[in-house]
Length: 89
Image (cartoon, rainbow, N blue to C red; front, side, top):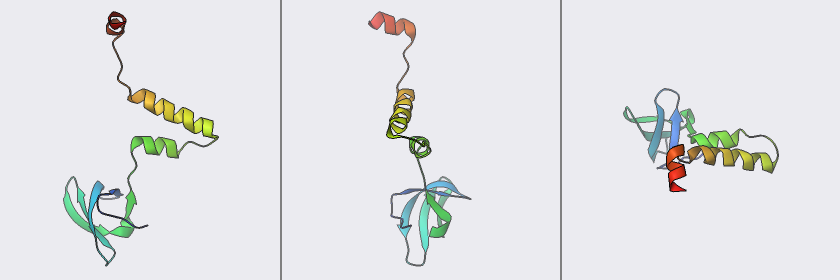
């Protein structure tokens, strides 16, 4: 896999980070919460958002995929207090 600066990645030891630079020697400079570190590119995998992970694990028809996406989007919506919702109506 080819990595580019700006991509979110995950490393087994350092966790999630962002690629700062990729070098021809097979290493990448990655900014992790603990600081910048140069690691082997082979030790990295692309990071997925929660939504990407959920959708990536849906098996079935296109309708199943659509339904899963709608569930994710529904949970992202802010919930209104029932009393406030009634008074706004």
